[in-house]
Length: 144
Length: 318
Image 1 (cartoon, rainbow over the protein chains, first blue to last red):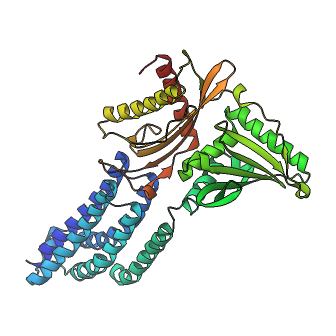
Image 2 (cartoon, each protein chain N blue to C red):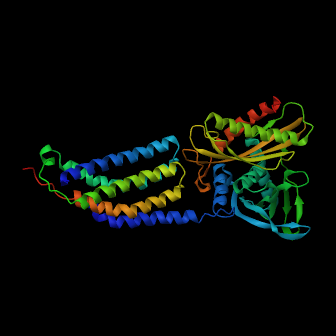
Image 3 (tube, chains in turn orange, purple):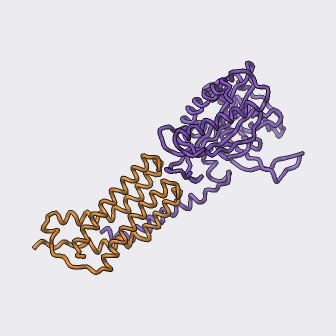
């Protein structure tokens, strides 16, 4: 897979995931799956976790405003890099969504939910950030 | 910039969450641990009783039997300090009596009984083994269940000059007051003294079970206290939209109903406590997820359910 294609897929995935997790929390609150205190605490923990990653994606998207920039020459990536770049954000986002579902269905208590979020953040957050930084944190070359 | 900050922010987030977890785990399930005192203190704040009473202690004490301490049997003692500017004992006691009577006039129920039932609900403790001590300067007013009359009574003891002697409080008789938590009983008096108590118990079971049936929820979890001729106590869990009809939260409700004799018959006096927790699906929340329901919401529900209970008994429903 070429680099620009991977960037596009991952950035769309992160932006959509961010919105979906945010809307999931609001929906669960409205349905009674979270109390007001739990909702505000969950938002204050989950949203910054995702915002750091989404920030990278949004930064990339704004830098490729024109089609020509998007279609700029890009190199083929190694399969292990592509695999890791897909795996970590997907697991990270699914783990957060899974924990929210586990909390609202009372599989875990709110305290356990917060501990588990911290564990997910520690396990995947830093690595995901590092991988995504390597993918996004470059100046886009001007279109030829 | 964000990736550069990441390794720094992560440990901070984890540490903050960890501290929160430790403090939560330290909350013991023991009644005298952190949870029950804070529940009682919150209730004092909510009902504005904290203006008059300060929480002092909540502890287990050995119960005396035949003049000897029985270490196997523990009673639960709540200690409250009556806040007064008076320095003279008699004036302080009079001020205390005024507060009790004012509460009874405003709320239509006895304050010592309200505190007593809040204690046994918050600690899930049998009412025969609980007592509330209220300290009015050097006097102590004790609220407890009298084993002979089976009524919650108040005993005031003066300890001035180390001579213990009973003092009489000029309280408004309970029977003269009718509040939102009490109703007179209509219909013929039942000959079996336990029949009324069983009927009240059945009403509550039917009421909550029917509510869950309509909401397509599982049958509620009931915990019933042994039937007494003048008292019904039960706890129900796994119900929704009873006290908080606009929120889809799990509710856990504790009900105490006293059957009192009054000059023109009998009346029911009801004390309710409630907790709520979030959750979807059929799995009930764990105990530490529950939070106290506001007193004002409980009062509204108490009045509503008592009127339905009155109709149920008057209709002679089985």
